[in-house]
Length: 120
Image 1 (cartoon, one colour):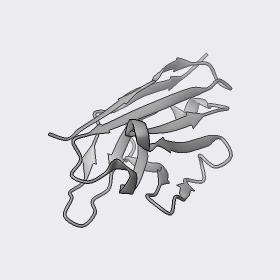
Image 2 (cartoon, rainbow, N blue to C red):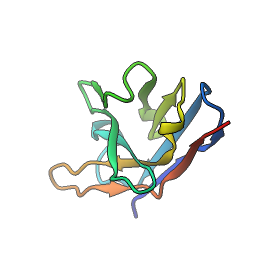
Image 3 (cartoon, rainbow, N blue to C red):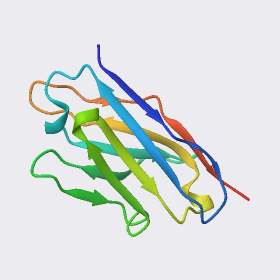
Image 4 (cartoon, rainbow, N blue to C red):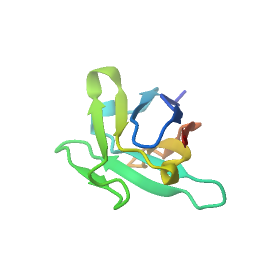
């Protein structure tokens, strides 16, 4: 059974930092070969892609809103992907979701989400 579990959300003041974690278990193939993404969804808005880290060779991609402030990384030994978020703004407030894109012979998966609230 595949489980995608996020953690690390919370309430932070503008300008602060948070690190989100996502642990994936039960995947059909080795975690290391999967692309992994973070999405977010703010109230009343569509879910949007924040960042992606690929399997080997590893590369990263960011939404314009995340560039220069967020960093996605992975620890394959821990089956974990991270999203380090710095210089947070109120507009970063959203539920953040971990996403495993589909690949040959494997469907896609979503985590349950973790709430990030940026407010003074």
